[in-house]
Image (tube, protein in one colour):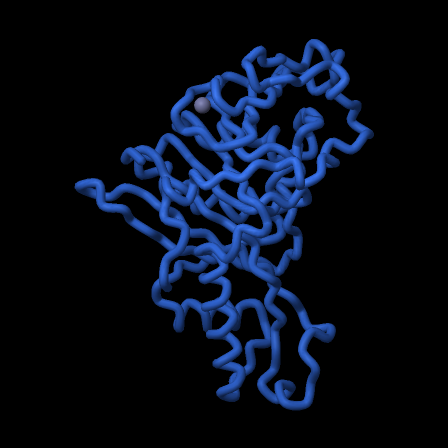
Length: 303
Ligand SMILES: [Zn+2]
């Protein structure tokens, strides 16, 4: 990883239930208490003399949205911190739920949307690991936050409002930076994402990495992560989505897709379905194993 590159490992933690200290003994947890979203992020960057720098973040929201609009609202202020300090290449790493990180709305935003917010940004990869991948560093942050809040409640204090939770976490989790994300921010990103052109991709469940470059309007989709190739990966390409940045209406499928001709790429016209058909229905059993990311970046850290 060069100085201009960072790796952003992110995950939604299980929502936190606000609680009153008095309730703890008598109540069954998980009733109708207000829930809070915790999006946990570990960012790996290169500091001076190439030392690996690891920063932990937890962004919190009263909105329980976990879709693409929420993801970008939660990530935006963190990304901005680094881009303001000269970062130009972003690598994301996450699980691959189709309702959250790996879907056509995310693909569209990674191709175009994100660049409109960050004029200095040059390239993005989003890398997906399987659900059974085990606990990663973001899970550790979520665990620390919940245990801390529960401990405070057990000691007799209420954690009954959003602001109380944020205050308590800020005061007691010194290694983690906290930030509140307002529902209006999430709405703003959701609106932008919902207005943008999206393209279906039949092989979505096979996608383990997508890569975009500024001003290219295309997204390279790969069945394994590759950090060696540029826009076209000669090793793992399973397709390329080509967006029409000018009009939002759908042209014919043939015009919208550029088909890779590499050995591995066999995306034919019949793989391209209309908007209404499911584009996420390839069984997990077709996935291939990938051990590369773990070797490339540290995947866990004691907090
Ligand atoms: Zn490659």
